[in-house]
Each structure stands twice: as structure tokens, then as C-alpha cells.
Amino acid sequence: MTTQTVNANIAWNLGLDGTGVGVAVIDSGIALVDDLKNANQTASRVVYSQSFVSGQDATDGYGHGTHVAGIIGANGFDSTGAGFSRTFKGVAPNVNLISLKVLDQNGSGLESDLISAIQTAIQLKNTYNIRVLNLSLGTPVFESYTLDPLCQAVEAAYQAGIVVVVAAGNSGRDNSMGTSGYGTIASPGNDPYVITVGPPTAWGPRIRATTSLPLIVPKVPRCSTT
Image 1 (cartoon, helix red, strand yellow):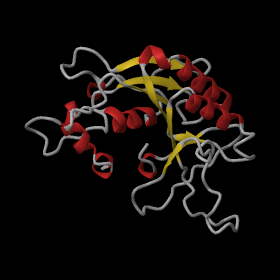
Image 2 (cartoon, rainbow, N blue to C red; image 1 turned 180 degrees about the vertical axis):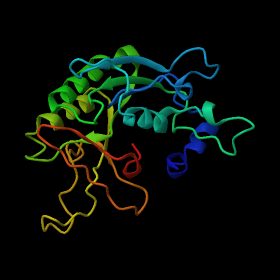
Image 3 (tube, helix red, strand yellow; image 1 turned 90 degrees about the vertical axis):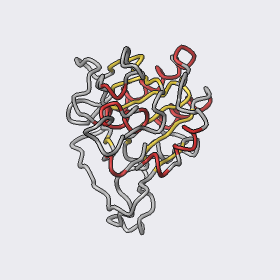
């Protein structure tokens, strides 16, 4: 489990559970589930939601964003009680979540929408105390990070004081291009100003095929702890 991998329980014992901190999740949206409410279930901790997908509202039609939000901030409400042998909590179980939807019901989206969502997270930083920006998605690398508009967008977030966490990708040590597995990290995970996260296990990669560009390919949840 992610919480065990990062020793989250040590932080919890010190009273560090994300209270007052905002995490922006750029993904497929976040469903308003019980695990993402406050401790007494009176209000959602998803404090802001916006869709950048043309013609769609901010609801999660794909499920990936809600999964990611649970890893970040689930409080374990729906796995607590007599009928459960284990409670499943996120890393920061009292954090506030800012949902910025860029992926549709098929898990695809436009890079331009992703850049707009990053810019919105920067604008909302002081309003919601956004300290972390999570992107469990990416797009193939076609140029240096110094020229890539997506990489420049995440660097702007970094310069604004936001920690940017990005999935490494799903290609693993793919050698189909004769690179001995190198050069498989997706953009913007290839940018040195972000924290790029890979899997904590030896499970093999699952690769999603895209039909056209520019598309964002969400990372399969089991291959990312972001």
C-alpha cells in the first residue's frame, strides 16, 4: 500500500494529516464519495471543481481521478466498521482537494486543456493553499523539456511555490526502440523541476495505445503511486 511505502503513519502520529493543505488533482475529475468528506461527513473536502473538457461538467466519467484522489486523501470512512478487517486511507486523509478535469470518459484529453488546468492551479494557489499539484498522466516526449510547452507549464507551477508530482509513465524498461529501456519517461515527468514517481513493485507495465495526438494518456493506477 502507498501509505506503508511512504511511512505515512509516522506523519499521522505527529498530527500531520494534510489539514489546511490543498492538493490540485489534474485528471478525469473527482467523484464526491464519502471517503473524501470531512471527519464528521458534513462536507466534501473536494473544495473546488472545474472541467476543461469541452461540453462536459466536472464529474468523473472515467474513474481514474477519483482513484488518484483516494490515494492522496481518502479518510477510510467507507472501509471502517464491523464489516471490515482493514481501513484504507490515503496519504493525507484530511487534505483538501481541487479537482481540475482534463480527461474525458475514455481517459483521453488535449494537451492544451492540461496546460490551462495547470495555469488555473497556479491562479488558485493562494485561495485554496495549493501546495501540491498531482498529474497522474502524460504525453510522449517529442522535444527537450526546455522547449516543451507542457514542461514549461509545470515549471511555472514550481516557480509559484507548488510541488509538482508526476507519474513516470507506463512504458517501464521497454526496449522496442532499441534504447535498452532508456528514454521511456513521459512528459512532463521528464522535467527536472518535478517529482517523477514510478511503481514501488516489479509489476510489468501496461501500455495504452492512443489514436491521435495531442493526447494525454493516463497512467494505469497500479503503475503509479501518484
